[in-house]
Image 1 (cartoon, rainbow, N blue to C red):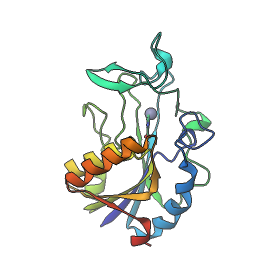
Image 2 (image 1 turned 120 degrees about the horizontal axis):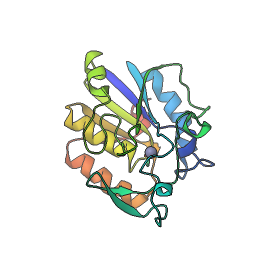
Image 3 (image 1 turned 135 degrees about the vertical axis):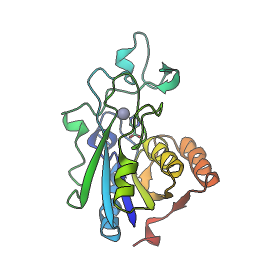
Length: 202
Ligand code: VGL
Ligand code: ZN
């Protein structure tokens, strides 16, 4: 069974949002077209409390996009984004949600960030996404969404580690940093993952 994981296609990651990914809105039509080609569609949702420590606003004297240490891990400090219950945290209204069977929220612990849909960045706590997929008989996962160099990348790394055949649908993602995604792409290929185009599925 094949699952499509729609990663963080939320207003704050789309131009006009608090942490806009350049061209983020361009992936939505393809993300919608791809959905009927899969046995299962799920979505992840970045869902932060207002005082999340990944926000630069929570660190005196720190600017957005500077880094710090959080729980012993290097942490990029982001603008406030995807705050629980705000419009920025909602899925884009352009995204077809009718086939989405389950939503996995992440980033709810204020003390640690969570890029992957499977675990927080310290692998302290699972979202149960892996168990959910396995329970549905899924062995292959395909990733679309935002951002290619953060949440899509970390979700792909964990999917590989969990033993899923893993493909990033490259034209159904956009990156915050092109260099960041070039590196991420190499790492995924090196670990046995795939980077494909949507046209190979449609
Ligand atoms: C993301 C930075 C912070 C993402 C989420 O969805 O890629 N990036 N939170
Ligand atoms: Zn976030």
